[in-house]
Image (cartoon, rainbow, N blue to C red; front, side, top):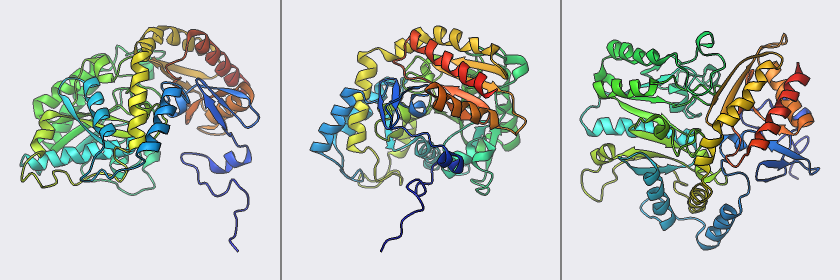
Length: 440
């Protein structure tokens, strides 16, 4: 007879979750529609974080659901190694058309973590193809989040994500992060102070020599660390330094892609074209896992050598370009276009920023940062230790104020679906303020 778990919550080891605390007081979600979740009792709960930065078109949108159902009834799976199917080619073409000019090729995977590791491997393969096999060093940034693969945690700059997992990849260095509360407190959009921090890349190049460096990877707006918008001109300065020393520049747009900052990609908002863009999350509005890398023509061309029958890049995943994911992606892109959701986010940005900034009067709020339809709110640590206050606000918000928010320690993050309106924003801020006060 098969032995069962102690209860029906024990078997699932939940990711990035305080499992013991959760299972004492579960926050269970049963249904979703538009801007709202429902729990098992039918209580409507406002989604303040678009799932997990991903449901940009809202939940359970009928066109996406219909596309997934139709694709499942037609082609459930096809091998992506040496075979293909039309939805993958169609989606790749649509994504290349959305990206900045010159980024013409799309490599599919299943998540942001895989997208980052894919981009890093493409950078190394590109160097090898050019006869620059010594250029293996990768440069990330402090407080950067690039997923949970060994490549991503190595170039990432969040210590908790890597401190118990060994040394990670060798040959990694990090730029300084771009946040200084004394200079940037309560910033709306890109802060004036901090452009010069990009110049630290020159120090890193001088230390290691450009001949050893393959690529630099940054989030245009650092999201998971608590919404850190780039200082004005910072990304352009990075691009200039990379060009000067022949370094590839990779933008991790897993969070910033698909309208979060009012444009298809942050590269468009900031007028900076990287050599690769990592994407995931919003590409399907969270409906089916999908990620990928949009790659510049010069990188792709460098690898398209040798006999035609030879594999050019020994990399990929069983579910790369999965038919259901591609169908969801095509339907999501249609929704973004037909409902003008990227433009909607841009128009709503000042309304969102003004509303969120009213929380500066709430107890224990140390700083607020907004950029596009994203906000980070820093709370003073509780006497019980770092993270206790943030956790208490999250619990109060869900159980008592019908709101889902994201926490990273004592930082609260907001990123509502792009279908949000001004009245919805006001409700979100009112509920969050009540939760902050209740947890004080």
